[in-house]
Image (cartoon, rainbow, N blue to C red; front, side):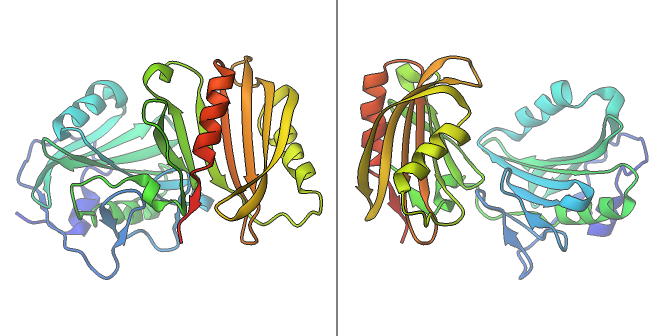
Length: 310
């Protein structure tokens, strides 16, 4: 049978039962209210007054610490479900487990406790090639927010199984050698890269980001050096060289330095470029724990490819 959002919203909520009824079916179509979740091909009607999140793919309500997260993975749905069943959801925390069909895909809806702090709702659906996971989290006592979260979860539509490149959502781009650096993720609008190939086990990292606001100070070199010394979580920093640069039509400064990382307590190469633009400055920042000369040259080459998307 086809069941309504209202009925789906009530499945397992506080009932403490596990169902094997596989006849439940959700069939959604795209509407004018549907919004594409950034970095995915998932469409959803988010709850009213929720904000789009920057540190994860989804939406949140800050006042109630309620979140709604979306994941589109190149992984068989049954493998994903097994991982949650065997590792991530404790049997003692399970409230309900409901097999279902979601827009023609095999699916599963799980409600579980997250300690005493939160109640979580998990919706999985997909096939042998792709899995969509939707996770809603709210305070256990907030039944109003629970209804809002589940209503949004059950509005979901997978527009396309193809998984988009999160870098498409950034308003700038760089080019990297896949044998040296590999794209990690988009976080808070920043492009994060990590070591690849022979560098995969090393502490090699690169961040490309846009700063809020423009630098109006006359001494821009001092601004960059202050940023290096105060914002990048290193101690005992020694600047080796500071040079003016011009990349993508923007003036800036490049700094080569070394410092001890707060994270791993290792001496690291610190490579920093800050580019100045009237609509907001850009930062390219790389670190490495070995092969300083080689990685300095690599960071310079990558920084030179930086471009804003027009």
